[in-house]
Image 1 (cartoon, rainbow, N blue to C red):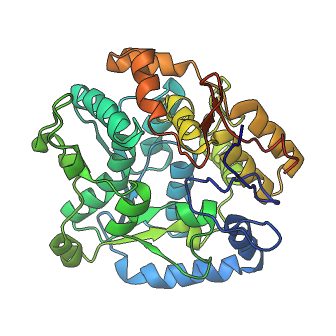
Image 2: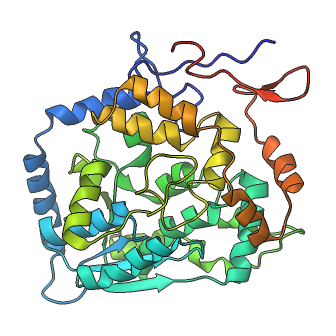
Length: 380
């Protein structure tokens, strides 16, 4: 049978079907790797000085000087560390609780207020609404965790506007870090457009109104409503990506926060990735949610994590290919936990999920099974 053509980066293991747009140069190296190479030539001490100069007018003698959206994960611990230790600011920590924390992730999150000496605000929506949003997000976008992305990408800006705090700090610029969307010399800031177009894949809260199977009332969606243009202008609201001023290495960050703050990785391995340090705030993120990415785009967290570790020199490309082979296609057992959570069965899941398969990746064979090209089969 004729399978759709797919190419892979010759440096990392990202495919041309990546959910984050990529370009490949004449050597077959992806734009994500090329932009990552720019980090080697940056004077990061100078970058930090630029940021310190930029935030000087925002310092106050009392009160909150900034907001940080935190899940309790490795990235938010490092963000809090960076803001407290390198910038010397007093942050308000803000968490969106999507009701799916692993036990270790919940402990990490609750510990933050103590280890960072900071006030911590946790927003916990109605569980009944979250279950409906899980089902609706899955049916509408192919992502049961759309509500989780929307919550953490909205609540910190919303709280900052309500408390009249102009500065909100974020981690890395996702599409630049993964796919090289922008140069490391562009200094993008967090905006409503970034949130909707990239973080939320073009959807917003209004798109979840009016569904008959899983009806959602507008007043249940308040935590997903971004501040108005008038509020943004009144407060002078800015979202600053720390990744513009820090080389951003998750492995190095994890080592630091584990030693300095007692942060805990997962004691148990995940089924779809070799890392134990990622996405502890949502038990489905490394499993059922990531399996949906494999269904849609033909790859998963094995590819994501291996590509990052190849770029940072923690593994070879050959080792990365083996990680992809081992993890990307696994149908994780937490799918059944999620189906019980939302009150649906496996047949319901498969029928909907198959509707999101990209024809640029997947084709059915003569027996009706889904097939695609794989990186290890072509010696790519």
